[in-house]
Amino acid sequence: MVTVAEQVGTFLARLGVGHVFGVVGSGNFAVTNALRAAGVPFTATRHEGGAATMADAYSRMSGKVGVVSVHQGCGLTNAGTGIGEAAKSRTPMIVLAAETVAHQIHSNFAMDQRDYTRSLTATPERIHSAESAIADTLRAFRTAVRERRTVVLNLPLDVQATEAVGEVPELTVEPRAEVVPSEVQLTALADAIARAERPVFIAGRGGRTAKNEILELARHVGALVATGAVAKGLFNEDDFDLGISGGFSSPVTASLITGADLIVAFGSALNMWTTRHGNLIGADTTVAQIDIEDSALGAHRPVQIPVLGSSAATAAALLSRLRDHGGIRYRTEAVREEISNGARWKDVQTEDLGEDGSAIDPRELSKAVNNMLPAERIVSIDSGNFMGYPSQYFDVPDEFGFCFTQAFQAIGLGLYTAIGAALAQPQRMPVLGTGDGGFLMSVQELETAVRLRLPLVTVVYNDASYSAEVHHFGPDQDMGAVTFPDTDIAAIARGFGAEAITVRSVDDLKPLEHWVASNPQGPFVIDAKIASDGGSWWLKEAFKGH
Image (cartoon, rainbow, N blue to C red; front, side, top):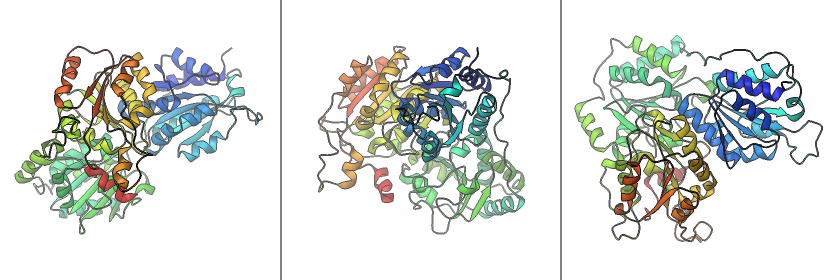
């Protein structure tokens, strides 16, 4: 007999899901094995929270739908933060959650999984019966792919165990078609670009699939290009790429964006992070925003030209209209030189905070690590005071070389992110930038990285504290709740089977060079004892919104 659980797993495999992550218990054992039997790779994680963020990162970096498999009740709640991050980021992902039988209200695992899912801003779905199982599964998958939603598909235990009805069909689900703006909106934006003298295009998550169209338009009309952090690397090939717009921006990048007379956001929310609470937008700057969601237009700040459309279709339509309106505009030789010399923080001169040798300046650490690693890499970032350093000082080859799970602003997701991203791009060396707080919060998954033999470079910016709070509240407050004794993170990492070193100076990094050259078959952890930066440049901007 083929059960509904087996049918659901087999159907998802045929629909094309890419990888499944999870902690297997009695409630999700059958559906997980069905996925495995159908050829979908499975990674057993040490915590459901790790599984959720690994699947999120995998989906972002592979272009395929990642799957999370969890036990009923506590398995789902353990995955909650990762599901919330994915949902807020509009990651196409499916969570297969076992669910207690409806009438078993006194079960230890009983809970309202549907409303819990909604509270995480994810989309709840359910396998209602053997007769509807195929349709229910297809609906969940279509929602994930076409609406870019994180879907929690609940599988009641009694329904899972029943005999399946019908055969598993051979179907494909195409992504949502490109959305062309209305004539009125397109004309308004085309006219604004034609008038602009210093246009800047900013691409967010929704612009990642429109790189060629946006770049062709920008080059034709003389616009500079920048990205939100989630799209870092998108415009690497262009000489007029400003890098990340927002709190991470260098002084040169910030100045050139502020100097724009027109900013066009392609699939970017223009939230407080991307605009530095609006401070990157000049008083007389016209702002246009392009998005496929009407509710997203003007959600974070007023925009003069809202455009309902997809980034690629809008950019292509604009180029067609503006064939006679080309020009150098903001793409002058002087601006090119300014960008070349100062748009990246690694080119900005800063004081070395670690000259006494007791701790290393996080900027010098980041520069040195960046130079030692191969160009083909995929960088992931945890959250904290340190996060601007790896985000800005670590180079990436393209938009599939940077994974930024920060929509929920949770610390502790970095290690999970790095593992999921590594499995999505196995030809690239995975690199993680994390703080000591976030790393220790998620350290159980280091065993997963060791088991998978991932050549994962983990840079722990270790200042023995939750330093965002230390620097935010200042020395006049009691810091006992957010500071800790120094921890030998290198020793902990070795206990999991990773190679590890303790770093207080650039010279201490020499073993990393040897490791990179050794065809590594496991993780390398750098316990970097960093000097205090008094609060990073981006943190000062960030806390203006708290």
